[in-house]
Image 1 (cartoon, protein in one colour):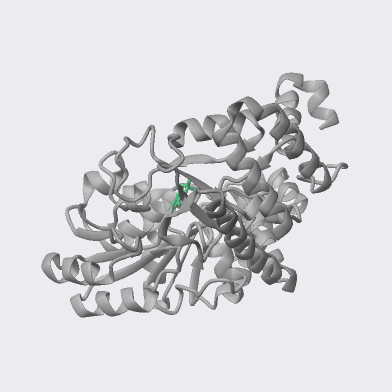
Image 2 (cartoon, helix red, strand yellow):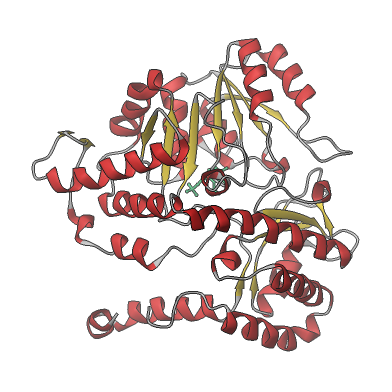
Length: 411
Ligand code: PLP
Protein backbone atom coordinates (compact mmCIF):
# COMPACT_ATOMS: atom_id res chain seq x y z
CA UNK A 1 0.00 0.00 0.00
CA UNK A 2 2.99 2.31 0.59
CA UNK A 3 3.86 2.23 -3.12
CA UNK A 4 0.26 2.79 -4.16
CA UNK A 5 -0.05 5.69 -1.71
CA UNK A 6 2.89 7.42 -3.39
CA UNK A 7 1.90 6.69 -6.99
CA UNK A 8 -1.89 6.84 -6.86
CA UNK A 9 -3.17 8.31 -3.61
CA UNK A 10 -6.74 8.47 -4.94
CA UNK A 11 -6.99 4.72 -5.47
CA UNK A 12 -4.93 4.01 -2.33
CA UNK A 13 -7.53 5.92 -0.35
CA UNK A 14 -10.29 3.78 -1.88
CA UNK A 15 -8.49 0.64 -0.66
CA UNK A 16 -7.93 2.07 2.81
CA UNK A 17 -11.49 3.37 3.08
CA UNK A 18 -12.88 -0.03 2.09
CA UNK A 19 -10.78 -1.68 4.81
CA UNK A 20 -12.11 0.91 7.28
CA UNK A 21 -15.66 0.22 6.11
CA UNK A 22 -15.19 -3.51 6.72
CA UNK A 23 -13.62 -2.92 10.13
CA UNK A 24 -16.18 -0.34 11.15
CA UNK A 25 -19.29 -2.42 10.51
CA UNK A 26 -20.89 -5.84 10.52
CA UNK A 27 -21.20 -7.56 7.15
CA UNK A 28 -24.26 -9.78 6.79
CA UNK A 29 -24.31 -10.03 2.99
CA UNK A 30 -24.78 -13.77 2.46
CA UNK A 31 -22.77 -13.88 -0.78
CA UNK A 32 -19.67 -12.19 0.63
CA UNK A 33 -16.70 -13.28 2.69
CA UNK A 34 -13.27 -12.02 3.74
CA UNK A 35 -10.61 -13.74 1.63
CA UNK A 36 -7.44 -14.55 3.54
CA UNK A 37 -4.27 -12.43 3.22
CA UNK A 38 -2.71 -15.40 1.34
CA UNK A 39 -5.53 -15.36 -1.23
CA UNK A 40 -5.12 -11.58 -1.56
CA UNK A 41 -1.36 -12.01 -2.05
CA UNK A 42 -1.89 -14.42 -4.96
CA UNK A 43 -4.43 -12.02 -6.50
CA UNK A 44 -2.06 -9.08 -6.31
CA UNK A 45 0.78 -10.96 -8.02
CA UNK A 46 2.67 -10.90 -11.33
CA UNK A 47 0.54 -13.81 -12.51
CA UNK A 48 -1.91 -11.13 -13.62
CA UNK A 49 0.39 -10.51 -16.60
CA UNK A 50 0.34 -13.92 -18.23
CA UNK A 51 -1.72 -14.91 -21.25
CA UNK A 52 -2.47 -18.62 -21.04
CA UNK A 53 -5.33 -19.42 -23.45
CA UNK A 54 -5.93 -23.15 -23.38
CA UNK A 55 -5.28 -25.62 -20.58
CA UNK A 56 -2.14 -26.79 -18.72
CA UNK A 57 0.27 -28.43 -21.18
CA UNK A 58 -1.92 -27.33 -24.13
CA UNK A 59 -1.64 -23.53 -24.30
CA UNK A 60 -1.79 -21.17 -27.24
CA UNK A 61 1.01 -19.01 -25.76
CA UNK A 62 4.62 -19.67 -24.84
CA UNK A 63 6.01 -19.20 -21.35
CA UNK A 64 3.11 -20.92 -19.57
CA UNK A 65 5.15 -23.60 -17.81
CA UNK A 66 5.09 -21.68 -14.51
CA UNK A 67 1.41 -20.69 -14.50
CA UNK A 68 0.55 -24.25 -15.56
CA UNK A 69 1.68 -25.32 -12.10
CA UNK A 70 -0.84 -22.98 -10.48
CA UNK A 71 -3.73 -24.29 -12.58
CA UNK A 72 -2.76 -27.94 -12.02
CA UNK A 73 -2.61 -27.33 -8.27
CA UNK A 74 -6.01 -25.62 -8.34
CA UNK A 75 -7.55 -28.52 -10.29
CA UNK A 76 -5.95 -31.24 -8.12
CA UNK A 77 -6.95 -29.54 -4.88
CA UNK A 78 -10.54 -28.96 -6.04
CA UNK A 79 -10.83 -32.58 -7.18
CA UNK A 80 -9.60 -33.75 -3.78
CA UNK A 81 -11.87 -31.36 -1.94
CA UNK A 82 -15.04 -32.37 -3.76
CA UNK A 83 -14.24 -35.83 -5.13
CA UNK A 84 -15.10 -34.58 -8.61
CA UNK A 85 -13.99 -36.44 -11.74
CA UNK A 86 -13.21 -33.24 -13.62
CA UNK A 87 -12.84 -29.58 -12.59
CA UNK A 88 -12.47 -26.45 -14.71
CA UNK A 89 -11.11 -23.55 -12.63
CA UNK A 90 -11.09 -20.89 -15.35
CA UNK A 91 -14.58 -19.32 -15.26
CA UNK A 92 -14.23 -15.64 -14.40
CA UNK A 93 -17.44 -15.70 -12.36
CA UNK A 94 -20.46 -17.76 -11.39
CA UNK A 95 -22.41 -16.27 -14.28
CA UNK A 96 -19.78 -17.24 -16.85
CA UNK A 97 -19.57 -20.74 -15.35
CA UNK A 98 -23.32 -21.03 -15.84
CA UNK A 99 -23.16 -19.71 -19.41
CA UNK A 100 -20.49 -22.33 -20.16
CA UNK A 101 -22.61 -25.11 -18.62
CA UNK A 102 -25.60 -24.13 -20.79
CA UNK A 103 -23.30 -23.90 -23.84
CA UNK A 104 -21.83 -27.35 -23.19
CA UNK A 105 -25.15 -29.15 -22.89
CA UNK A 106 -27.81 -27.20 -24.80
CA UNK A 107 -28.74 -25.47 -28.02
CA UNK A 108 -30.54 -22.11 -28.03
CA UNK A 109 -34.28 -22.69 -27.76
CA UNK A 110 -33.94 -25.82 -25.59
CA UNK A 111 -36.20 -26.14 -22.58
CA UNK A 112 -34.70 -25.67 -19.10
CA UNK A 113 -36.49 -26.22 -15.79
CA UNK A 114 -35.09 -23.95 -13.06
CA UNK A 115 -36.06 -22.17 -9.87
CA UNK A 116 -37.97 -18.91 -10.28
CA UNK A 117 -35.99 -15.78 -9.41
CA UNK A 118 -38.63 -14.42 -6.97
CA UNK A 119 -38.49 -17.75 -5.11
CA UNK A 120 -34.71 -17.72 -4.72
CA UNK A 121 -33.32 -18.66 -8.15
CA UNK A 122 -30.49 -16.71 -9.83
CA UNK A 123 -30.66 -14.37 -12.83
CA UNK A 124 -28.82 -17.02 -14.86
CA UNK A 125 -31.60 -19.51 -14.13
CA UNK A 126 -33.96 -17.95 -16.64
CA UNK A 127 -34.46 -14.24 -16.08
CA UNK A 128 -35.64 -12.40 -19.19
CA UNK A 129 -32.92 -9.78 -18.70
CA UNK A 130 -30.22 -12.48 -18.80
CA UNK A 131 -28.90 -14.74 -21.59
CA UNK A 132 -30.71 -17.66 -19.98
CA UNK A 133 -34.18 -16.18 -20.33
CA UNK A 134 -33.50 -14.67 -23.74
CA UNK A 135 -31.94 -17.71 -25.44
CA UNK A 136 -33.67 -20.62 -23.71
CA UNK A 137 -37.22 -21.72 -23.14
CA UNK A 138 -37.45 -21.54 -19.34
CA UNK A 139 -40.00 -23.31 -17.20
CA UNK A 140 -39.85 -22.18 -13.56
CA UNK A 141 -40.58 -24.07 -10.36
CA UNK A 142 -40.94 -22.46 -6.96
CA UNK A 143 -41.57 -23.08 -3.31
CA UNK A 144 -44.91 -24.03 -1.76
CA UNK A 145 -46.92 -21.19 -0.29
CA UNK A 146 -47.53 -23.05 3.00
CA UNK A 147 -44.10 -24.54 3.73
CA UNK A 148 -41.92 -22.17 1.67
CA UNK A 149 -39.90 -25.27 0.70
CA UNK A 150 -39.17 -26.51 -2.83
CA UNK A 151 -42.17 -28.43 -4.07
CA UNK A 152 -40.58 -31.61 -5.47
CA UNK A 153 -43.99 -32.84 -6.69
CA UNK A 154 -44.36 -29.67 -8.72
CA UNK A 155 -40.81 -30.05 -10.09
CA UNK A 156 -41.63 -33.60 -11.20
CA UNK A 157 -44.98 -32.62 -12.75
CA UNK A 158 -43.39 -29.74 -14.67
CA UNK A 159 -40.56 -32.00 -15.82
CA UNK A 160 -42.99 -34.65 -17.08
CA UNK A 161 -45.14 -32.04 -18.82
CA UNK A 162 -42.36 -29.95 -20.43
CA UNK A 163 -39.63 -32.58 -20.96
CA UNK A 164 -36.73 -30.17 -20.28
CA UNK A 165 -33.30 -30.88 -21.72
CA UNK A 166 -31.76 -29.66 -18.47
CA UNK A 167 -32.95 -29.19 -14.88
CA UNK A 168 -31.17 -26.69 -12.62
CA UNK A 169 -31.15 -26.92 -8.85
CA UNK A 170 -29.36 -24.49 -6.55
CA UNK A 171 -30.32 -20.97 -5.56
CA UNK A 172 -29.36 -17.50 -4.43
CA UNK A 173 -31.84 -17.03 -1.60
CA UNK A 174 -33.07 -20.43 -0.46
CA UNK A 175 -32.15 -21.16 3.17
CA UNK A 176 -32.84 -24.89 3.20
CA UNK A 177 -30.96 -28.02 2.22
CA UNK A 178 -31.66 -29.09 -1.37
CA UNK A 179 -32.50 -32.74 -2.03
CA UNK A 180 -30.09 -33.45 -4.90
CA UNK A 181 -31.09 -37.13 -4.98
CA UNK A 182 -34.71 -36.14 -5.61
CA UNK A 183 -33.63 -33.85 -8.47
CA UNK A 184 -31.46 -36.67 -9.89
CA UNK A 185 -34.45 -39.02 -9.82
CA UNK A 186 -36.65 -36.50 -11.66
CA UNK A 187 -33.92 -35.74 -14.23
CA UNK A 188 -33.48 -39.47 -14.90
CA UNK A 189 -37.21 -39.96 -15.30
CA UNK A 190 -37.34 -37.43 -18.15
CA UNK A 191 -33.84 -37.95 -19.56
CA UNK A 192 -32.64 -34.44 -18.65
CA UNK A 193 -29.19 -33.23 -17.67
CA UNK A 194 -28.97 -32.19 -14.02
CA UNK A 195 -27.03 -29.02 -13.31
CA UNK A 196 -26.46 -27.99 -9.69
CA UNK A 197 -25.52 -24.34 -9.23
CA UNK A 198 -23.97 -24.37 -5.76
CA UNK A 199 -22.48 -20.86 -6.01
CA UNK A 200 -23.74 -20.07 -2.52
CA UNK A 201 -23.21 -23.35 -0.72
CA UNK A 202 -20.03 -24.79 -2.23
CA UNK A 203 -18.02 -23.69 0.82
CA UNK A 204 -20.44 -25.53 3.11
CA UNK A 205 -20.18 -28.58 0.85
CA UNK A 206 -16.38 -28.34 1.03
CA UNK A 207 -16.52 -28.25 4.81
CA UNK A 208 -19.07 -31.07 5.03
CA UNK A 209 -21.74 -28.82 6.58
CA UNK A 210 -24.17 -29.53 3.73
CA UNK A 211 -24.45 -32.62 1.49
CA UNK A 212 -22.50 -32.50 -1.76
CA UNK A 213 -24.19 -32.17 -5.16
CA UNK A 214 -21.22 -33.81 -6.89
CA UNK A 215 -22.43 -37.44 -6.66
CA UNK A 216 -25.79 -36.49 -8.19
CA UNK A 217 -25.39 -33.75 -10.79
CA UNK A 218 -23.89 -34.08 -14.26
CA UNK A 219 -22.51 -30.57 -13.94
CA UNK A 220 -21.88 -28.55 -10.78
CA UNK A 221 -21.17 -24.83 -11.17
CA UNK A 222 -19.88 -22.72 -8.32
CA UNK A 223 -18.30 -19.46 -7.25
CA UNK A 224 -15.12 -19.23 -5.20
CA UNK A 225 -15.78 -15.99 -3.34
CA UNK A 226 -18.79 -16.77 -1.17
CA UNK A 227 -18.73 -19.22 1.76
CA UNK A 228 -15.67 -20.87 0.15
CA UNK A 229 -13.72 -17.67 1.02
CA UNK A 230 -11.54 -17.50 -2.06
CA UNK A 231 -11.02 -14.91 -4.79
CA UNK A 232 -13.91 -13.58 -6.88
CA UNK A 233 -14.42 -16.22 -9.58
CA UNK A 234 -16.17 -19.36 -10.72
CA UNK A 235 -15.61 -23.02 -11.47
CA UNK A 236 -17.28 -26.08 -12.93
CA UNK A 237 -17.16 -29.71 -11.84
CA UNK A 238 -18.46 -32.50 -14.03
CA UNK A 239 -18.28 -36.16 -14.89
CA UNK A 240 -15.29 -37.41 -16.90
CA UNK A 241 -17.71 -37.97 -19.80
CA UNK A 242 -18.51 -34.25 -20.00
CA UNK A 243 -14.96 -32.96 -19.39
CA UNK A 244 -14.13 -32.03 -23.00
CA UNK A 245 -17.52 -30.43 -23.62
CA UNK A 246 -17.20 -28.29 -20.47
CA UNK A 247 -13.59 -27.30 -21.17
CA UNK A 248 -14.42 -26.26 -24.76
CA UNK A 249 -17.44 -24.33 -23.55
CA UNK A 250 -15.35 -22.32 -21.05
CA UNK A 251 -12.55 -21.74 -23.59
CA UNK A 252 -12.83 -20.85 -26.44
CA UNK A 253 -16.64 -20.55 -26.48
CA UNK A 254 -17.33 -18.23 -23.51
CA UNK A 255 -13.94 -16.84 -22.50
CA UNK A 256 -10.50 -15.98 -23.83
CA UNK A 257 -7.44 -16.03 -21.60
CA UNK A 258 -7.89 -17.21 -18.01
CA UNK A 259 -7.03 -14.88 -15.12
CA UNK A 260 -3.99 -16.76 -13.87
CA UNK A 261 -3.62 -14.65 -10.70
CA UNK A 262 -7.22 -15.60 -9.85
CA UNK A 263 -6.56 -19.25 -10.72
CA UNK A 264 -3.58 -19.22 -8.32
CA UNK A 265 -5.73 -17.57 -5.66
CA UNK A 266 -8.39 -20.27 -6.20
CA UNK A 267 -5.66 -22.87 -5.58
CA UNK A 268 -4.80 -21.12 -2.29
CA UNK A 269 -8.46 -21.09 -1.25
CA UNK A 270 -8.93 -24.78 -2.11
CA UNK A 271 -5.79 -25.50 -0.08
CA UNK A 272 -7.26 -23.62 2.88
CA UNK A 273 -10.56 -25.45 2.51
CA UNK A 274 -8.71 -28.80 2.64
CA UNK A 275 -7.49 -28.01 6.17
CA UNK A 276 -9.47 -29.46 9.10
CA UNK A 277 -10.12 -25.93 10.44
CA UNK A 278 -12.26 -25.24 7.40
CA UNK A 279 -14.74 -27.97 8.34
CA UNK A 280 -15.07 -26.33 11.76
CA UNK A 281 -15.56 -22.96 10.02
CA UNK A 282 -18.31 -24.33 7.75
CA UNK A 283 -20.14 -25.87 10.72
CA UNK A 284 -19.86 -22.61 12.64
CA UNK A 285 -21.25 -20.65 9.66
CA UNK A 286 -24.38 -22.82 9.75
CA UNK A 287 -24.67 -22.75 13.57
CA UNK A 288 -24.35 -18.98 13.49
CA UNK A 289 -27.00 -18.66 10.76
CA UNK A 290 -29.38 -20.83 12.81
CA UNK A 291 -28.76 -18.80 15.96
CA UNK A 292 -29.21 -15.53 14.06
CA UNK A 293 -32.45 -16.74 12.43
CA UNK A 294 -33.85 -17.98 15.77
CA UNK A 295 -32.90 -14.75 17.53
CA UNK A 296 -34.50 -12.65 14.78
CA UNK A 297 -37.63 -14.81 15.07
CA UNK A 298 -37.67 -14.06 18.82
CA UNK A 299 -37.57 -10.34 17.86
CA UNK A 300 -40.75 -10.82 15.79
CA UNK A 301 -38.92 -11.07 12.45
CA UNK A 302 -40.07 -14.28 10.77
CA UNK A 303 -37.49 -16.46 8.98
CA UNK A 304 -38.96 -17.76 5.71
CA UNK A 305 -39.56 -21.55 5.99
CA UNK A 306 -39.10 -21.22 9.76
CA UNK A 307 -35.30 -21.22 9.81
CA UNK A 308 -32.22 -22.29 7.90
CA UNK A 309 -29.94 -25.25 7.16
CA UNK A 310 -27.28 -23.09 5.53
CA UNK A 311 -25.33 -19.85 5.82
CA UNK A 312 -28.30 -17.57 5.19
CA UNK A 313 -31.75 -16.72 6.39
CA UNK A 314 -34.46 -14.88 4.56
CA UNK A 315 -36.49 -12.67 6.87
CA UNK A 316 -40.11 -11.69 6.25
CA UNK A 317 -40.63 -8.13 7.57
CA UNK A 318 -44.34 -7.79 6.90
CA UNK A 319 -45.27 -8.10 10.59
CA UNK A 320 -42.75 -5.37 11.40
CA UNK A 321 -44.32 -3.06 8.82
CA UNK A 322 -40.99 -2.01 7.29
CA UNK A 323 -40.07 -2.80 3.67
CA UNK A 324 -36.88 -4.63 2.73
CA UNK A 325 -35.53 -1.50 1.07
CA UNK A 326 -36.12 0.64 4.16
CA UNK A 327 -34.70 -2.03 6.48
CA UNK A 328 -31.55 -2.20 4.31
CA UNK A 329 -31.21 1.59 4.57
CA UNK A 330 -31.82 1.70 8.31
CA UNK A 331 -29.32 -1.09 9.00
CA UNK A 332 -26.74 0.68 6.81
CA UNK A 333 -27.18 3.84 8.90
CA UNK A 334 -26.34 1.73 11.98
CA UNK A 335 -23.25 0.10 10.42
CA UNK A 336 -24.88 -3.22 9.51
CA UNK A 337 -24.62 -4.19 5.84
CA UNK A 338 -27.29 -6.54 4.49
CA UNK A 339 -29.54 -6.65 1.45
CA UNK A 340 -33.23 -6.35 0.75
CA UNK A 341 -34.60 -9.55 -0.76
CA UNK A 342 -37.90 -10.69 -2.19
CA UNK A 343 -39.64 -13.33 -0.10
CA UNK A 344 -41.67 -16.05 -1.84
CA UNK A 345 -44.98 -14.64 -3.16
CA UNK A 346 -43.78 -11.15 -2.24
CA UNK A 347 -46.51 -8.55 -2.81
CA UNK A 348 -43.89 -5.79 -3.20
CA UNK A 349 -41.83 -5.09 -6.35
CA UNK A 350 -38.19 -6.30 -6.50
CA UNK A 351 -36.85 -2.80 -5.80
CA UNK A 352 -38.81 -2.59 -2.52
CA UNK A 353 -39.42 -6.19 -1.30
CA UNK A 354 -40.86 -7.40 2.00
CA UNK A 355 -37.70 -9.08 3.20
CA UNK A 356 -34.03 -8.98 4.00
CA UNK A 357 -31.38 -11.66 3.52
CA UNK A 358 -28.79 -12.17 6.24
CA UNK A 359 -25.72 -14.40 5.99
CA UNK A 360 -22.93 -15.45 8.33
CA UNK A 361 -19.80 -16.23 6.22
CA UNK A 362 -18.09 -12.88 7.03
CA UNK A 363 -18.92 -12.67 10.73
CA UNK A 364 -17.84 -16.30 11.20
CA UNK A 365 -14.52 -15.60 9.46
CA UNK A 366 -14.10 -12.78 12.01
CA UNK A 367 -14.49 -15.33 14.81
CA UNK A 368 -17.97 -14.46 15.98
CA UNK A 369 -20.12 -17.15 17.56
CA UNK A 370 -23.63 -17.68 18.96
CA UNK A 371 -23.38 -14.96 21.65
CA UNK A 372 -22.46 -12.34 19.06
CA UNK A 373 -25.23 -13.61 16.72
CA UNK A 374 -27.83 -13.04 19.45
CA UNK A 375 -26.61 -9.50 19.97
CA UNK A 376 -26.40 -8.86 16.21
CA UNK A 377 -30.04 -10.00 15.86
CA UNK A 378 -31.07 -7.57 18.61
CA UNK A 379 -29.12 -4.78 16.89
CA UNK A 380 -30.72 -5.53 13.50
CA UNK A 381 -34.18 -5.50 15.11
CA UNK A 382 -33.46 -2.21 16.85
CA UNK A 383 -32.01 -0.58 13.75
CA UNK A 384 -35.02 -1.65 11.65
CA UNK A 385 -37.70 -0.74 14.20
CA UNK A 386 -36.19 2.37 15.80
CA UNK A 387 -34.11 4.31 13.27
CA UNK A 388 -33.70 7.14 15.80
CA UNK A 389 -31.37 4.84 17.77
CA UNK A 390 -29.00 4.31 14.82
CA UNK A 391 -26.08 6.04 16.55
CA UNK A 392 -26.39 3.87 19.67
CA UNK A 393 -26.65 0.72 17.56
CA UNK A 394 -23.59 1.80 15.58
CA UNK A 395 -21.59 2.16 18.80
CA UNK A 396 -22.30 -1.48 19.72
CA UNK A 397 -21.53 -2.54 16.13
CA UNK A 398 -18.15 -0.80 16.39
CA UNK A 399 -17.45 -2.42 19.76
CA UNK A 400 -18.22 -5.92 18.41
CA UNK A 401 -16.17 -5.42 15.25
CA UNK A 402 -13.26 -4.07 17.32
CA UNK A 403 -13.19 -7.34 19.29
CA UNK A 404 -13.56 -9.43 16.09
CA UNK A 405 -11.85 -7.29 13.46
CA UNK A 406 -12.08 -7.88 9.73
CA UNK A 407 -8.40 -8.57 8.88
CA UNK A 408 -5.41 -8.30 11.21
CA UNK A 409 -4.14 -4.80 11.86
CA UNK A 410 -0.91 -5.39 9.89
CA UNK A 411 -2.76 -5.89 6.57
N1 PLP B 1 -25.41 -18.59 -9.29
C1 PLP B 1 -25.93 -18.31 -8.08
C2 PLP B 1 -26.86 -19.30 -7.44
C3 PLP B 1 -25.57 -17.13 -7.43
O1 PLP B 1 -26.11 -16.84 -6.24
C4 PLP B 1 -24.68 -16.23 -8.07
C5 PLP B 1 -24.29 -14.95 -7.44
O2 PLP B 1 -24.79 -14.51 -6.47
C6 PLP B 1 -24.20 -16.56 -9.34
C7 PLP B 1 -24.57 -17.76 -9.91
C8 PLP B 1 -23.33 -15.62 -10.13
O3 PLP B 1 -22.08 -15.42 -9.62
P1 PLP B 1 -21.23 -14.16 -10.09
O4 PLP B 1 -21.79 -12.98 -9.39
O5 PLP B 1 -19.83 -14.53 -9.70
O6 PLP B 1 -21.37 -14.06 -11.58
